[in-house]
Amino acid sequence: MLKDITLGQYFPGDTIAHRLDPRTKILLTTLYIVALFSANGFVSYAVMIACLILSVRLANVPPRAMVRGLRPVLFIIVFTAVLNLFFTPGGREFFRWGFLTVTETGIKTALFMVLRIMLLIMGTFLMTYTTSPISLTDALESLLNGLKRFRVPVHELSMMMSIALRFIPTLIEETDKIMSAQKARGADLEGGNLMQRAKAMIPILVPLFVSAFRRADELATAMECRCYHGGEGRTRLHVLRYQRRDYNALAIGGVICVCVFVLGRLGW
Amino acid sequence: MSVMIEAENVRFTYPGAASPALDGVSVAIERGAFTVVLGHNGSGKSTFAKMCNAVLLPDEGSVSVEGMDTRNEELLLAIRQRVGMVFQNPDNQIVANVVEEDVAFAPENLGVPPDEIRRRVDASLHAVGMDEFVTHAPHLLSGGQKQRIAIAGVLAMRPDCIVLDEATAMLDPMGRREVLSTVRRLNREQGITVLLITHHMNEAEDADRVLVMDDGRIVMDGTPKEVFSRVEQLRDTGLTVPETVELLDRLCQDGMPMPLDALSVDECADAIANALARKG
Image (cartoon, rainbow over all chains, first blue to last red; front, side):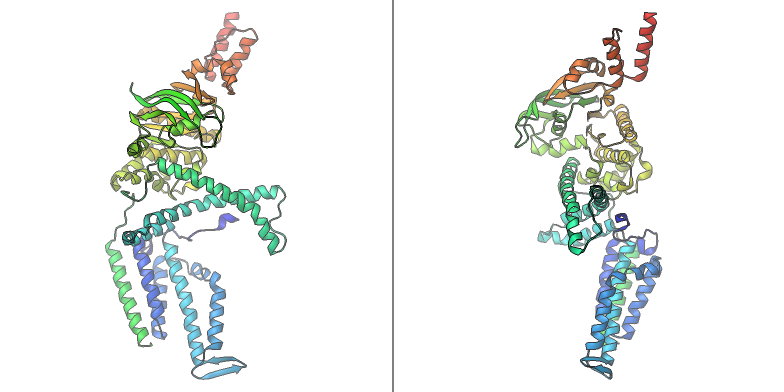
């Protein structure tokens, strides 16, 4: 059951969206977010929606998967919609009940806010759908490389991230084993109220942590034995290189971002 | 034959431990040899293995790899590049999410250029017979396969010697066979010195040399035939002898003179057949 957890929910594929350099995808996503927050009217939102639909098409990700990504934030979306709908004054008033009002501005703000959250989530999900967690880590290391000058431990952070990713399946497997072992000793993991269930987690977490520390120790020795001595003088098997398609994609993304920014300023 | 690893009167006590883990170990491991170190738990065999590439440093005495003293910190990378180490738990020594990335880890650390890394990764995976798993996720492989990946990861450093610290202890018989035959082939075909630490007697059968450790000392040293025929002494150190030798020894005790150096099943069967023929 724990095995069902997928991380980064990467959909392997060989589309243009998959082939783009992961750094390009991070930059494009950043541009997309900037554009999204400067969108301010029906026209600019329409452009954003068109961009997203086009990218999803290009990435060949099933639309169902995009919608599924929204499920965890459903509560936030509904909450935002309700708040904006009933508590925004201004414009023509359609409805009033006590302190709750529904106004023209309210409807518009609610609609835009909901759209913005949905587009934000779906856009970033599209990036993780088309990029494996490992290439994302590599891309981040490469993009943040300049920060090394300010003594930000970029290499160390990215190494930690990729090791964390590497050990997720191993630790999940181990958790499963410990749970079975504790169940075999008569532990009741499912029954009882919230407090009891939280308490039932302790005999799972303690051995899990102990073993994680032991693993970390062994892994550190194994890494040292393979001549690991930090990021200095390190080369890579796969070197990230921008291709022509990356420059094109960035140029198109940049132009759209500027357009949406201008449209937003104009209130369209 | 030149000397690969030389230990001279090595003493070592773990911090807080009452008795020393190594109590005066002196041994020279020859280049190109397949050496097996046997011993029960706590005999110091794993500690000795960790001395071989400066994971642990001796309190007294010295260890040198191809003439380089392991206590010299400037030589640390050079020593570790020459002596690769494979550990017991396959899960705790695989660093990356993809097989090829993991094998590339050591050459990446050594600053090898990308195309050369590619060549080394492919050659190493080929040497351990895992070519087809280049882009697989390591956690989905079997134990034996994971250990072979770990061996490939070490091979990519182009080492002269591989130390396997109980690398077969957590594997099923199939995985153990896979790993052993891989290591034997590397020893024979590429002339890589192998130091295999184990407590499985039968893994020592076709070694060039067997060292038996007990209480932090080397108590026996010789060819497998020499060592295993000293049945009583092996039992005293808490080790069981291989089943074939066990059988021959019992026959001896029951009044049927037998040679005790027939290690493989075939040799053992021949020895018994000969003895029966002699008896008429």
